[in-house]
Length: 260
Image (cartoon, rainbow, N blue to C red; front, side, top):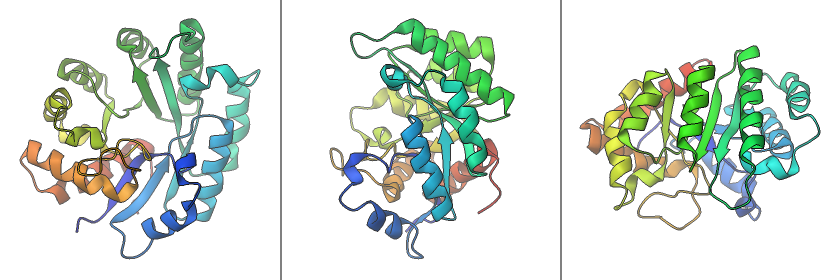
């Protein structure tokens, strides 16, 4: 069994975990678990409060604060004021996110998403925090804003082309990979993974989504990163434990977390 898995992006507040949330977390934080730490990726104010509460309950549970682009239809009057109010509530808030751009669904407000993302980047920079970025069907706008603002952070659940991954790394950002890497038809993702240097790779689940093969289509959880790590290690030609360890050290470095 692989050890020392740090899931850099999870959503245990999702309704998929309503039937057995605390049981799952208890298993993940047990002595027999391969998981050593989790980072909750916040999506709105309610999600942030969940993360802050869980971070207080579990030693190696960390959290973020931020507004996902899909939260644009339910934003408070002043999102940045909300983030300013939330930040002092926990020393285990280590990032701003999940923030970004998502043009996938009809009816999205491009200008609102861009303004929200820019404001959250400026907030993160003012507080010297990295960001957890989401980008779907908005690559050029996203890259343009990254080049303009030069933030620290990670582009999570990467599914794009190798040349875009190289551009992201050249800006000093990290790249997060999920169980998508294991999918048989994910050839582009595999090529991108091969291009990203080991010192810039994060491993994540995005659970309950993106369960790796052979669990594709089922509810994902953090210990399934083992399958993503084995696939990634084969691509890199290294031992799976080496990949787990490198990804964990990258997470600690990016988010300013002491060794766990």
